[in-house]
Image 1: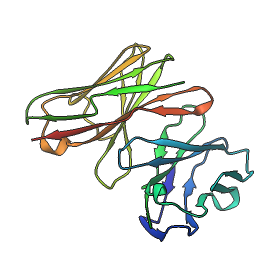
Image 2: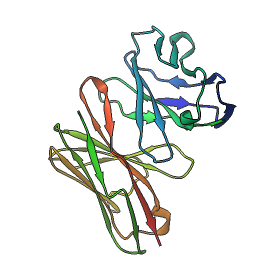
Image 3: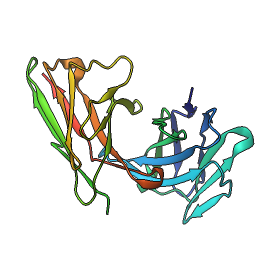
Image 4: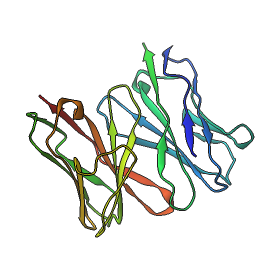
Length: 114
Length: 114
């Protein structure tokens, strides 16, 4: 069975603080894909990153960075110098190998206050 | 590229009536589309997977006679909520699978049944 767990339901920070959103996953597949999406109040899902299971390199994109640790089955997301516009719900998602479905974690609601 | 247009963005209907939600792939052919439901403050739950020209595959616990899915062409998938009740009020989102295990999502439909 596949599962994605985001234990942080809500996080509140003050602007310019760094914040890390945790994601832990479970899968028996050797090939799988991990995703992060942002869902602002409008509801539309915004794609942030996709990572396959064979690529453990961390990635940085502007203020965003991702730490993929296969040994701990984690794919954490860090926002550096957070801004009010970062306020949203963030979902971690997992797709297993051939024919696998995309399943989502519970989501973390991030609130960045000025 | 790879845009999915979802309509309507919101709809209010009376209890007992049916509502149709459309998802169109604008610049690509979507062989497989997914339908998700999201209740307030909750995650996206996969309802069904639709493949063009064949019957949809429903997730456990989703009533196929209530949530009718039609994927008659490579650019259009529809979800019809039949005999809607207040408990069906939710945010419905469609998604199309792209190559290399990427996904593109519609902007969602907020359904309110009164």
